[in-house]
Amino acid sequence: MPAFPTNENFNDPLTQVLDVLRPATYMFRALDAGGDWALRYPGMKGLRCYAVTRGAIWMHIDGEPQPRRLEAGSCVVLTREQAFSMGSRIDLPPQDAIGTLATAPWGAVVTINGGGEVYGLGGMFIFESAHASRFLETLPAVMHFEGLPDQARLNAAMEVIMSELREPRLGGRLVAQQTSLSILVLVLRQQLGQSAMTSQGWLQGLGDPKISRALHAVHVAPAERWTLATLAQEAGMSRSAFALHFHQTVGEPAISYLQRWRMLLAADQLQRTRNPIGEIAAQVGYESVSAFSMGFKKFMGQSPRAFRNQ
Image (cartoon, rainbow, N blue to C red):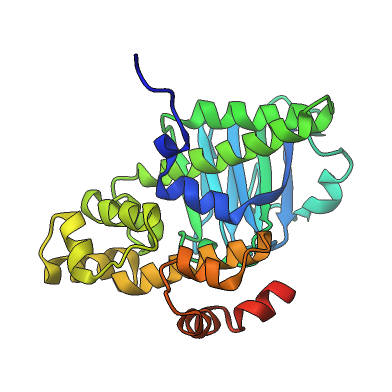
């Protein structure tokens, strides 16, 4: 008889990072537009996601030399506080998006000029974790997907959240919370599916067959006494080749990444539990509380105790 699945079946780096970051706020609306229109969105914290399911629109992100055309089946994800304009034409004077969208509650459809030509879904995530910005900084500033396999599932997940926001029902908060997590997973999976990722970062490392094996080992057993040699062995590479390839792909040395992940785990435990600091230190691979405290202060800018009391 096959064994029942457990949490260990899904103990992968992507799942673990999202468990630590904990999306706390998720807000979605739909847009049904027709004729000529343009909206101006301010820069905002968190991760924002926009998908076009019918028609096409123009999107000009501040700092980019050219606007992007989003066809049906396209999705754009912003991970920084970029302001941008969006509309049927990019040369129109834009209206304030916040004021326009605020005419409808979360989960509703905002109609412009009677609608009928363009339909899209937009939403944002704000993370509960105090160190979420450190994660977002490792992602590309703009992720643009077109016609990828998970697009239909992404659109369906957005519609589920909108339905729960629009018509609150028993268990609706849990449904919306879990669906928001699935949206993040689908978005990040699509980035992993890109054949060429030019920027460096943790997600790029997961997309590399060899580096991903080392990352998986670190995430599964953060307290293990990892060295550059043992991580290279996990990746099936020589020590020198692994060190160079990891740095080029992820953007930092392998041991530096290990320390970063340990400190993020420790910060999460300090924020969510009342476990003794010595116990938390041991869980992330430190035998000495003083060594852990020094490493934590170097990474987070304050001692573990001060971080917990904040």
